[in-house]
Image (cartoon, rainbow, N blue to C red; front, top):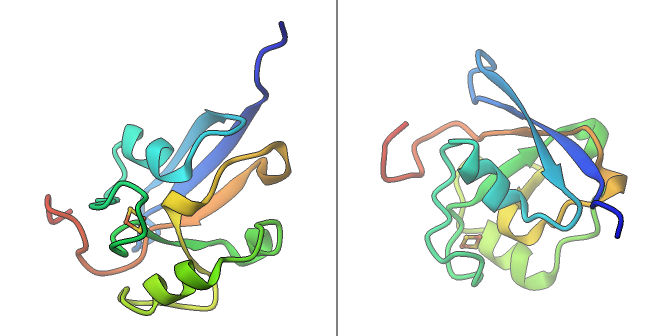
Length: 116
Ligand code: FES
């Protein structure tokens, strides 16, 4: 049986000072990958679309690679702070080979319990 493809993901802090590159597997959820890497993504509802604490900003160059957000996701994003046209909910993004080298910016503002 073949191994799932490895997908590189880069997280960049809100101030741009910290860049973390991690390797994920095809099918991994972006919220899970970010949390496992220690990124400040709370994800209170664990992907149940009942919060917006998994808000991330996808790099402009990568945004078009993602499937469109559902109406439900768009509605939840209305509740997030610092929303831009590149905002998405990390819990709704499943990594695929098409997203190789995805760059994800952590939004400004505190939105997690650790206050990081
Ligand atoms: S974890 Fe709540 S909407 Fe993503």
